[in-house]
Figure 1 (cartoon, rainbow, N blue to C red):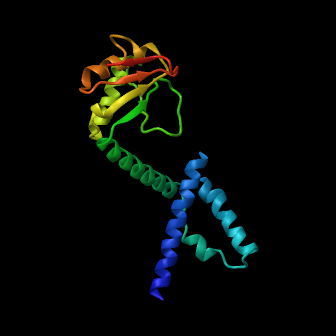
Figure 2: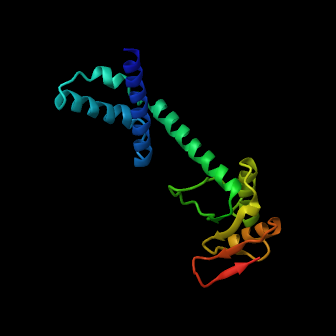
Figure 3: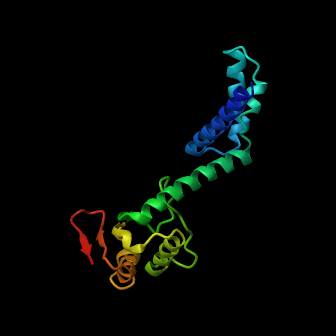
Length: 181
């Protein structure tokens, strides 16, 4: 009896995480769990399966705070895994100083003062120090070719070249243009 109750609670918790992941991927507000998903699940259980929904719904916490907490936990786990991997391997990075937001980022930080190469370099360097990722593991950098990125003396690449022991190759979006250290 206890094993089956425990299994049902685990299933409810697992469902809550899975639904939180779906909410995160959809980009919808976290409140959609309480306002749409739970009522929809309740309707399916009552109408299709002819079962009382209240017991099952209670085991799937989807409040705004719960969904937010679950999404934060999952993203923290992914970031931790990726940073641990980057500590041990050589990799390439794609860097952009723009204000656009993309879904698949290692991190996004606000540039407090400006978008100069030095400022961008310090933000990346500070993040890498925080996560114990050696800058020397970077073997290439892809950028949009903006002066803040590729400027010969004050671009991000020049600051990175100064700090890296092994050197860095830089490829612009045009495959024929390559810079090496």
